[in-house]
Length: 288
Image 1 (cartoon, rainbow, N blue to C red):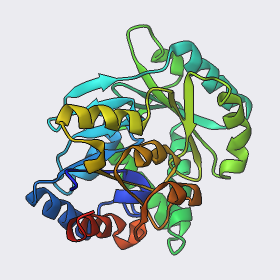
Image 2: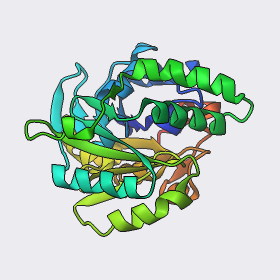
Image 3: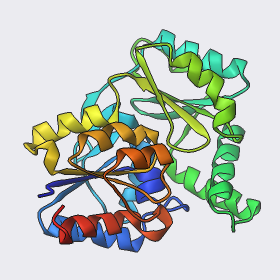
Image 4: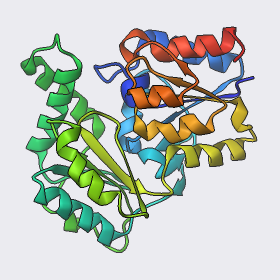
């Protein structure tokens, strides 16, 4: 019997306009009414993840930054897993050498050294995932969403890479997609202290090897007293694989990468057709 549902956000709980559909909201409420706990596990930092949840009145525990942080239902930090500053600098330098734009997720939020690139990256993503949306409209949507995400803009990353601050993750972007990112990925994969995944076609997410959704989920479930076989996980991309492997019941979204679908036990509808809601209702009605 499912006692805990854990959902990814981007490409999963969120539709292509970066919002939670009415159907997904209702399914979560029905699950909670039946005593099933709900939480999100996202690559986003806490300040990036909270707005979309607050917008629809969802308050839940969270695994953020791919497992770099665990946050309780009240918004209190439970755990951090960061990357040392020298590695952060190496990753940023390697990205710059290849002409790629990068961001740093700190314990207190997301930092960018180039607002224009940040807007351009979000606009390109929304335009690509919403082919019926004009580039101009994608720009309007991007500006609106970025205003909610509380991105911190700075001139130089050295401002935040100080001994008293914790760095959790580096994001590297390419509007051309994974082929342009692959050489950097191959380089970083050599470092056994790092894990490199993706949450979209246009990014790399670099975390400490112990900051993975599956590892964090295992710790959270243990604290809740819930066996992993009674956990259901839902995701769409490679940063979700570790939690799909840990959960007793796992769903890949219809829009998931093929490699992710091979890991999951079930496949649900896409994120634009309320795939999370359909997975939740299946878990309830079929007693998965």
